[in-house]
Amino acid sequence: MSSIDVIAPAAGQRVSGVVEVRVRVVGDVSASGVSLAIGPPEFGTRRMRAVGGGEHVYRWDTRRKLVDESVEAPADAVYWISASAQVDGTAAVSDQVSVVTANRAAAARSAPAVRGGWRPELAWAADYSSPERWRASQAAVVGGRYAQLVPDPVLGSARTVVRTSVPDAAASDPDQPNDRTVRFQSSSPRVITEGDELCVGFAFLLPADFPDVYPKDDPLNPRGPRGSGYIALFQVYGPPYEQGAPFVLHAERRLVDDPLGEVVVRGNELNPGDPAPLVSLPYRRGAWTDVVFRLRASSSVELGWLEVHVNQGESDAVRPLTWQGQQRIPRTLLRPGSEAFRTDMQVYRVRGCFDQVTVLHTGHRVAQTVAEADPGSYRGAS
Image 1: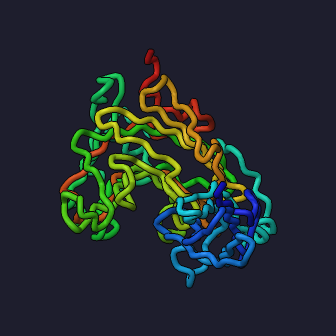
Image 2: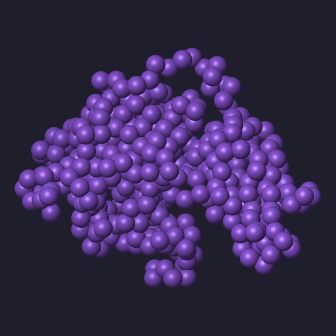
């Protein structure tokens, strides 16, 4: 019986420097096109070298970015590895094996100990009782002229929500950070530091006219070859402001095979080894999606982690999601040397893709427990 398996490194192994990834192919006749996938499919596959006995080898420099080996990797991360080949004329794919790079682990262990856990200073909640109180409760607001408090379109006067409708022309406003992007952004206080454990919750609703997004240069894009990029809805971010945020929830499709009409959390520069999105939620236009992210913020993948809790009407409270069989996912959520971080509700995108984008949100809160952070859009539902 034909098969292909990753035999080294072992699942869960810590690796550093240049590592030999070894694959064993078993077949009655022949194997061809043996290739290795490290992380997401858009990084491509690596050809492996046959070394005899059905084994093939690829030398992986774990110190370098997968997408550009001339650049040093900015953090240790979890990488998922799989192999594929034509074995006896049939396509064969191995199970995925996860490994953790350890090029920065020694430095992390030698750093001063961080107590970690919940701190009362982290607790915060947006005040939706009036426009003045809402603005005063935010640490910062960008594009506030495009936000208004309105009754919940689903629950009526029982709850007040923020409706943001951001036109492409907003790029020329004086409070926009640059003229390349268009954004509404409201922020919690910048108090999240190394070792903090917290829950951040919010609810968002995408209206009927919320656009589908397409990969760049997708020929099926009805808006033409300019593409539509992404629309960010939420992020955890702070200085140093290098590259993208370590954690973003957004509408984005990177490949034409990605499903249409989904909001996702993907890997990024600090977490590049994910083969698929961590979170994939259907748009469900016109209905609330409740989200609670429980996390431990750290610049070390050995210490940082993330849990995702979601409710799209399946129950009366958010429920945990699993990814690759795990509920708690190792994650780098700060950069080395980061100052305090914040959480942002957003409508943030590249200029020139949409005339206008509208999103509703409410319940933005930082709390100690999942239950406290749950926005409760379906509380009391049968």
